[in-house]
Amino acid sequence: MGDEGMTPAERIAVGRTKGFMPEAEGAALRDAGLRAGRIGPLLEVGSYCGLSAIHLGSAARAAGTVLITVDHHRGSEETQPGWAHHDPEVVDLRTGRTDTLPFLRRTLEDAGLEDVVIPVVGDSPTVARLVRGDLGLVFIDGGHALDIAMADYEAWAGHLAPGGLLVIHDVFEDPADGGQAPFEVWQRAVADGFIPESTTGSLRVLRRG
Ligand code: SAH
Ligand code: MG
Image (cartoon, rainbow, N blue to C red):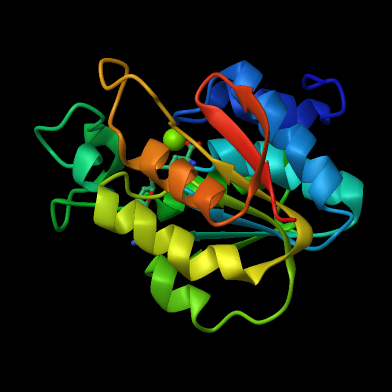
């Protein structure tokens, strides 16, 4: 476990990149990616500036597969001006709207992962309708409003190969610790037959039976 399998460039890029992924959770994510990459390609919903994509991309390279990372790069409700996770640096001064795509591109270049990570710019459920084939891992870390997070689950969970891993970020059982939507998605996945495998901080891994 940990980041010991990462290249020096990946490690440096982790230190430089904006995002929402504590080290232990990033290591758990990479671990899940390593195992799942033997089953099929990895898929991330919510690229933002590419922090979690370094962990998953590093795993994809080691496993001999790729990471597809989906984001419309316009930010979520919780990252808009006035909200807790807003960062004025990611605003396009020309329009006043969020644009994190240039940050993602830089991150992947710095990390040396441009040949392994495939960014897709678009709305997650819309992209999901175009995807065929069995994914090894689906990481859900997009919008955290209940309808958005549940739509991501419904759009992507069915694309997992048998034995593939579903990973959900920001799962908090206690409302005092954070929003409840990811926890509701986790509960729905369990009800649908996904088998809980591990919890690291707010990162939960489930396996498709
Ligand atoms: N995984 C990132 C954080 C993602 S933040 C990290 O580890 O740092 C959530 C991202 O989800 C935002 O960049 C936002 O633009 C994106 N997002 C929200 N709703 C979306 C949707 N419906 N389709 C595509 N991306 C979406
Ligand atoms: Mg998150």
